[in-house]
Length: 300
Ligand SMILES: Cc1cc2nc3c(=O)[nH]c(=O)nc-3n(C[C@H](O)[C@H](O)[C@H](O)COP(=O)(O)OP(=O)(O)OC[C@H]3O[C@@H](n4cnc5c(N)ncnc54)[C@H](O)[C@@H]3O)c2cc1C
Image (cartoon, rainbow, N blue to C red; front, top):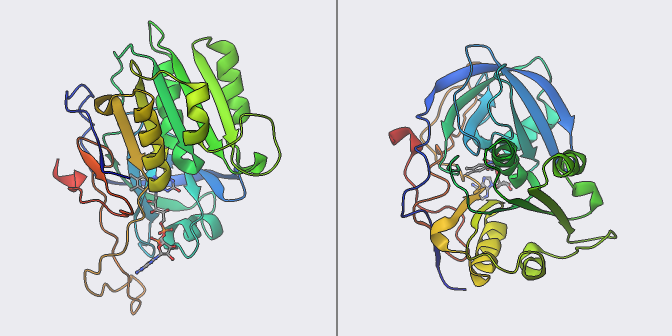
């Protein structure tokens, strides 16, 4: 596959909200949503975080024993400041392992952000296609929930890809939104196991579901390979790269910054690289690329 460059050279997307410093949050709930994904709800202890739907935060434990990792916020802003994240367990993963195995309601965590440019222009009127798999649904859900309230309404389609029926997230929520908002269409596709049509990977089923994308804005979030395959499929159906927004959930391989003593003393912690712009103006998704060169969002 050749190189695909995605972005918004026209610069129509709104300027993301500048990141504020780290802030304490209290975990108010943890719900197992699928065999591999938990949803964590957190309440701010020091004021509401201003952010745009689609942005992400860094999450770590208050004692700084796990590396901070990027997690997309799964809901638009609420008056009570609650945010939720969908965290997939990664085999051997430090922070996702901590979230799945040790994090409990009542625990204090540290949230830093918001970051990212995977955001929508609230005034955009073009029909919008959202493609997500796994916890890639998080920023997509926030974008759709916020777009549903827009006036005049714009046509919104979500295609969510899951392995089996057990991996389908938020089906009832999306069916309920579809019942209330005639301009929203929800489609889930299964890649494994029994279940109703459609079945197959999004790049394979997209031509029959959404054959004409020339006038669409497209948002894609999930694992880098998924994002890349979907972006290529959308482009083949006419989607314009300048109107495609991508959020590949790159795994941040550790960058050693030298030994850091834990508060308890003795233990050595490897610092994670702070994330960089996730989508964007000119992300280049090289075949096999795990970590594109991206500048730190702290710098913006
Ligand atoms: C913008 C953005 C948004 C994201 N949003 C989400 C989200 O909403 N939900 C979500 O679940 N994830 C999201 N991610 C991914 C998330 O940030 C983490 O990368 C993921 O949770 C894994 O972190 P971890 O600490 O659990 O794994 P890590 O400890 O980083 O390990 C990851 C993998 O690398 C392997 N590994 C570790 N060290 C090495 C090494 N030295 N050499 C080779 N392999 C190694 C591990 O065994 C494991 O398989 C997002 C990422 C980005 C960039």
